Length: 289
Ligand code: SAH
Image 1: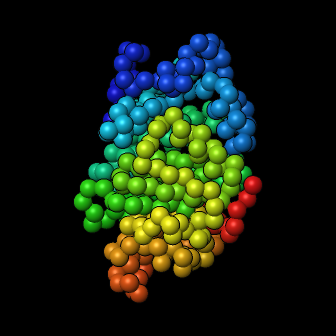
Image 2: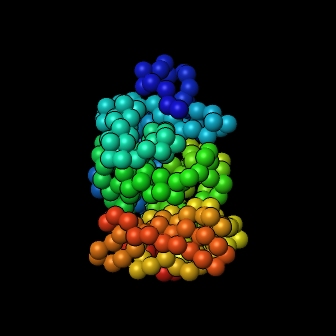
């Protein structure tokens, strides 16, 4: 769990500078902000340049928790207090699962956005990540994970996410499951997620580049599957990779989308329920880049 922002600098959580040895770079450079960027440029900058907001790191690998220290301009908008306020609003909207709320509190969403958008990280809205794709709205991330976890005590064993995007939801999932696999079809976004997640050192998360409509049969069966992009329906390959009793949650439909919850009740039986309206980017076949 995150510590207060008022912690002295040498205490945990450590800054990314400490971990990567970039501490020699000037503070002025570290405060540089950028205008509109593509995800690719953003990913490149993350490899070669210091960040405008300090990066979070895992306080303790055993705990698998993500923490952050905020500093510099815009700190108030990306502080732990603001993140907690976002989680309170999500709870007020009806999400009750304490494990989900705690996971949302521990993952710094601002770290998955380009510096120019970081100040909006804790507003409940989807934001662009490049390539006409978005980071999902925090409340829908929480809602879908809660639906997937319903009836589960403790952590889920194995979870699959289709549509890694910038990697935010995958990081949240990694707090509530023992093993998380996430697939992205666009190579630049797969690389962006890798870059975003590298410093977080999340040991139970594996990213794959490929067509998520095919799933990852070599890693299944999965107790939970979450789709972060909308198709007309759920691909049969994903239904086949669900464990018995496993739960899949997906946005389905074209313009008017709804969340669909599917539970595998028997080897050859799935029950499905259409839930509330939602709005996601479309699921596309094949790979790009
Ligand atoms: N999980 C993200 C949201 C991602 S947006 C978050 O953390 O907020 C949806 C993503 O799904 C996009 O990056 C898009 O490229 C990807 N996508 C669409 N169709 C896909 C497919 N068939 N396989 C894998 N990824 C796909």
